[in-house]
Length: 151
Image 1 (cartoon, one colour):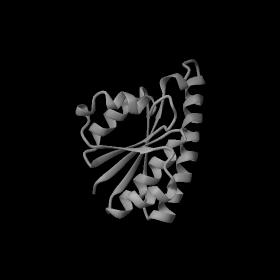
Image 2: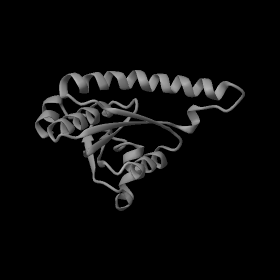
Image 3: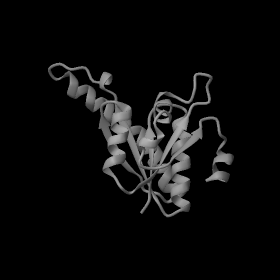
């Protein structure tokens, strides 16, 4: 089964990327993998502190994921898979792409702001030839109706 990989973060464009991935997966009998990455600066190292901060980050991710997963199951019939990694965003994304040969498409939300599409999208666009699959960029300001029409 072909899987759509989508990044879970707290950006507004994340919602459109999630919706698009779920709708495409539903229409093509695919699956969705939701990848959340805890950045290194979110975990302070110290006795007992690092583990507590890691657990808090995982709890936030799980809570946010459950909202998207419920919508995917209820409206699209998709049961997504959650993967949580820790480290540099780009390195962890590339590592996960390399570890799952069933991922057929990377779906990323692109910011509609004047500052550009976002740091991850900007970094990946510099070296598209190094990616093992196509990338679909979803504008963060795309309406739900337009998303449904193009998926």
